[in-house]
Length: 144
Image 1 (spheres, rainbow, N blue to C red):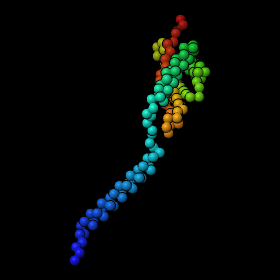
Image 2: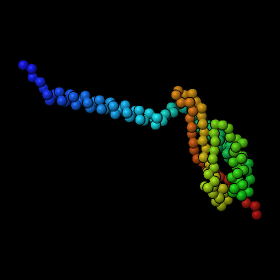
Image 3: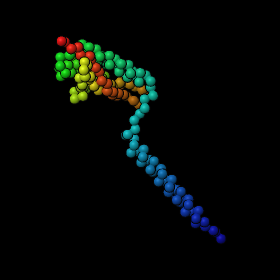
């Protein structure tokens, strides 16, 4: 005489179905999120290179500000853009939000958005993009 434990069979069947559902949900999650994962940069060489470029770009922009004489807000912005373009190469770009340029007392403040592209061959990463905003200022010498 064979005794069948029906309660044990149901529990094992439910366990198998739950494991299958969990595996399926995990696979769907990986497939759905695979394009949205950003890679962390662990190579300090790439980060150092970007930071060196950032310092160099800030220097070039400050140099451009010093080379341009103030002769009105709009003209100053246009001349600064032309002067910065002389220093720019293909690895970085900039944009000036002319709406946010401010003149305060004896100085002009110009916010600039700067984007840097660093080519690398660190594993699967072929290039790194870095963007930052910085406000540059120039003291306006008023002639009286």
